[in-house]
Length: 364
Image (cartoon, rainbow, N blue to C red; front, side):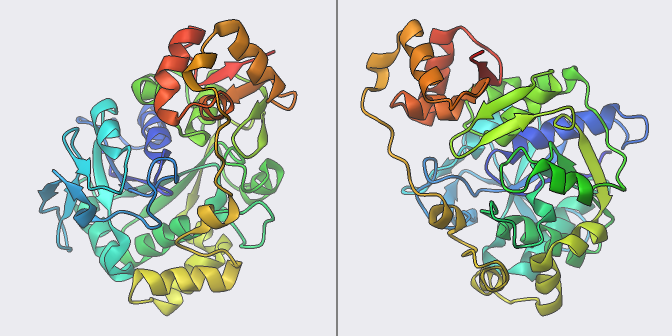
């Protein structure tokens, strides 16, 4: 078995985590190819346009979860199915990801605090081969806490600390350094200087294609596009990001080395706060970013311009996207939808009009 994969930041990270699992399974030096779909654990913690609530969703926020006993120590865990539904007003893409990703998608529920999260992880890993692979798309898991673009350090730090407390051999994998726009590529490559990267083959993204066709994740889409050879600049909702020859790479490093970079994770390990709110306060104290509402605090909600589906004319779309792209070579589908007055749920319709099946839209 290949062990447990953890999508460190929630949201769209399960998509990139599946690509990483496929890449590691194909690597002769990596874990053995799984005989069944990989187990991917993730927070149900998404952007405001998907989920208007302010905290990661827990078991009580869903109907239709499947409860499993797990293995090793710990009290079991819950898994998503395509029939799972978030209870309003909450929203979640996890049930649809459970439908479209060939993986077993498990819920990380941090609501009962750090120690309980560590027990969940231990239980999940105990039934999956006993090794953990944490995957972070973009690399903000290696934050020093003071980078000017840092937006959401808490979830990644909580994952690192919980894995440490779980006491199970763990490797952290940074995919596509800099692609989340929080820490620059150059800085991350310096922090990853002792790591020997893996370059995934293009076929590793095939299993995630159905999810990439509709999910608003930008970092996972950028990584998949880079693996397929895309280079140049990309306009995302909040940044212009450069795809370089380093962008497709997957960098492994030991858990303790990752924790050594991350002051919030170190403090969580040392202080072991009893509740999620107390853990978030630790992150806030060290970074100045509120742990449970960081993206809402640092990234103002952007209302799309009027127009909506009336703009769905191919030539008009391309002109509008070029005008809003700040000269970038590509745009993400999420940014394109906002530019056209659409929501993330309109991404499949937008793809149909543009007759594209690529993770990004090329403009130049």
